[in-house]
Length: 149
Image 1 (cartoon, helix red, strand yellow):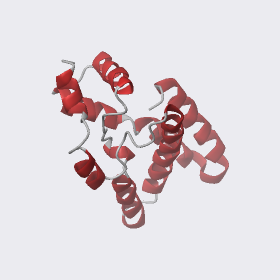
Image 2 (cartoon, rainbow, N blue to C red):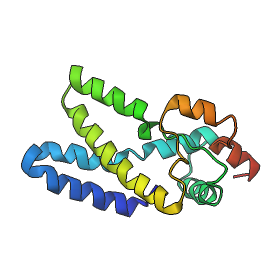
Image 3 (cartoon, helix red, strand yellow):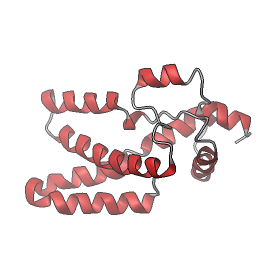
């Protein structure tokens, strides 16, 4: 949930740190650290029915004000996604392990950020968890409707 600049720095640092072990494949890790956040665009598009970069930032700011009453679903930030990437790494290509590594690095930084805000569970870790918790908490779609975003 950090900003793009911090994720770019995290991605670059990850690539540099892993280069001695992975060679150019370390770039896959670094790019994955950043591109995982494409799911925020997907969530915004689902919630509003369109894609607008300034709107995505407005929704993020609105969500920050209502963290105590919302549940977010960012598909690429779920353990379900991580399991799928692991399976793809086992059976399709080892490169999926590098994508998984980038996603996990990103997620660790996001969780540290959310813990500091006092809301480590504002985003669902599993699809089933989202289905259950969204019965009692406001979803991003409901948040955008309530505040006419």
